[in-house]
Length: 269
Image (tube, rainbow, N blue to C red; front, side):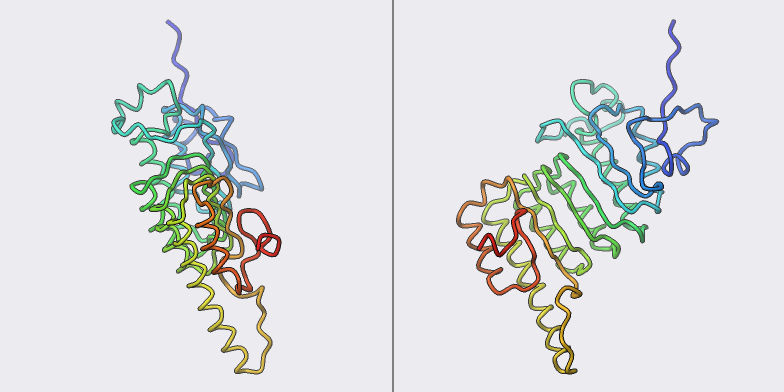
């Protein structure tokens, strides 16, 4: 009988906080850190269930990361909600196991722990993970408690209008966030109205800050003011003319947003 291969662990910085070598683990080659252990960027498609526990454990504990990017290339828009326990998760073979309720909840839990504790994480990228409201809400709450994030990228996560609203509510209270990427997120004019409200909210606060500077006979440094600089909304055909009109209206006299949808504002209006 062939001997079963041992489960694998994550390399570099994550490996240091993961299970010890004496636990009979071998390195997981497609989950690697770079940038002196400060950048984690990996694809989840071929990661088996047995390999996820050490990854999640390390992800929740490693507070040295400056950037986390977790990508799913499989074009799946739904989560297997009935796969809600370890026993069932172990049986999944036809798709990435992360696209099950059990594993996606565990990933969100690990990210929430990381976001809550870290003071270094500046960039969070989750690509192609179906993040409907039940999965997105805990993430938004953790983002709201974080002061280090500067860039939030959720391309192809299908957050929809409800998810867009939850994200906008979190981001508007975090002036440190500079970029928000909602490419391919199934956003309609309703979602555009939430984004417009976010821009309007931050614009009012910026004008208030600007006014304080003028009272002190100082020239305001527009680029130094906190708040969003770029919002990416590519591949959201549901926005339509109505959604774009809402955005252009609120951006007409905005001095801070540099680009939207990947196109400079001055070329779009």
